[in-house]
Length: 139
Ligand SMILES: [Zn+2]
Image (cartoon, rainbow, N blue to C red; front, side, top):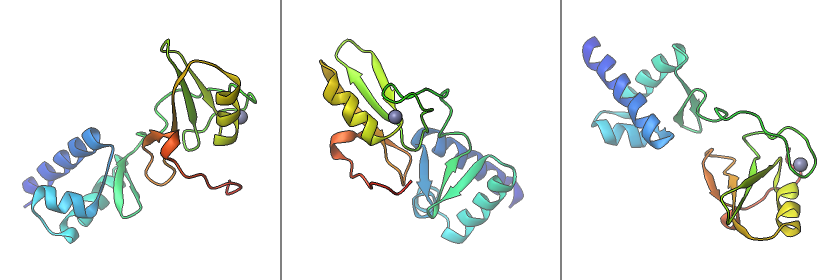
């Protein structure tokens, strides 16, 4: 049993490396064990500082925020990974803004924009800004 659970903990870490985050439900299904078992595995991984629990699931510690801190191309404030807004240009360059407000201003003032990306606040994934919903004034 200990060998088994250590093995599964490793696999959970690999799963998180691949997928970025996972819910307890997803992990239970992926490894064919109960939610309770995953829950215990996650607790151990949290205790050892390898993951963080989040919204009923798990993320790797340091998965969000690995990139070095950038400053907003619009207002010059440090860019938080949680609210980052990235404007990508057709030539492959990109500019970062601290928030959707700065990002949209930046977008409207620049040309040849290829894509805009922003951080999904709940899940920590990068998503296309065009598909995002913004909650104004929550910060
Ligand atoms: Zn800004």
